[in-house]
Amino acid sequence: MNDLSGFQRDLLYVMAGLDRPSGQEIKSELESYLDSEVNHGRLYPNLDVLVEKEYVEKGAIDRRTNYYDITESGESLLRQRREWEDQYFTANA
Image (cartoon, rainbow, N blue to C red; front, top):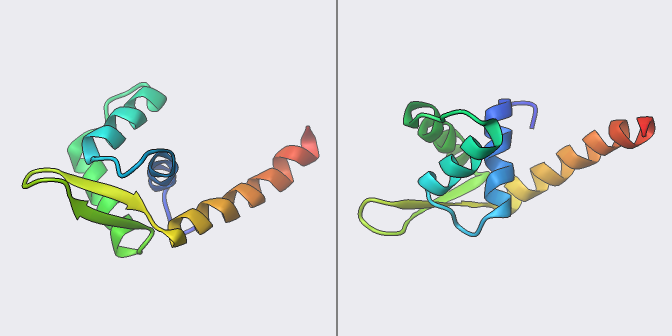
């Protein structure tokens, strides 16, 4: 996980909570969380990195729209991250 940016981690978390979202669905979810616009030039290159690293699977919904689905490897990465975070968060609670 340490080779990913915070934005890429956020993308994984969003995809983990949605069922095969399109890029636009991911964009909408992130914009509501970040309270700012996410442009295509930032979104899609980062999704492509996650696909290349095999944390995300990309497939076609139709001729113009793709879906993105977190892989087992991506979910495992998130679980490891949560365990790491929890050791610090719960220790100070």
